[in-house]
Image (tube, rainbow, N blue to C red):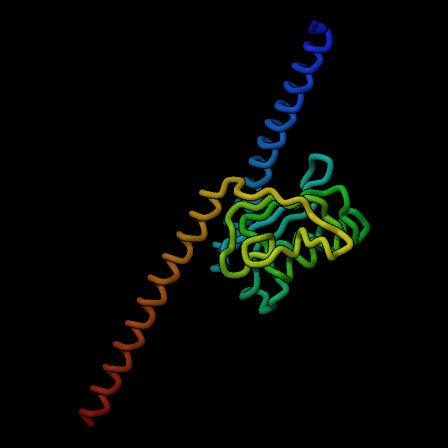
Length: 197
């Protein structure tokens, strides 16, 4: 015979788990939107639009966006900048109770920094087929050989994160083509002027 109290408790636990999952999804979208806002700052600098935020106890404690060309440094990835700021805010190199949100799957350098800083969870937007180190090319984040593994959530606002990258590279190709054609026209004009002499 079924115990009505036990059955009700099972329904309550299932409902609570569903509520927790829905809340987590809502928060993941909220913070990924904040990471996308950081990516837009990179576009304003002519940089590849990758953005990142780090959250601790419901507050953003680190923000970053790609600045490699602007700062002339390979280290100026969104994740590295956000990690530096979060560590400064926390007063520690360990970010053990934080979640990192990034619009593009981390590269090997950033994945290594995430593992080293002990961040327990990473939420990614778009995947990176060329350098993804959260499982696409290699999985540094959840490697059982390391002393720390990271929980990975993929595909949060993936369409938005992919679209901003596609739009950037489409515009970049157009701009590069126009510059190449302008350079070619200038060289042709220069040749024409020099042959007239």
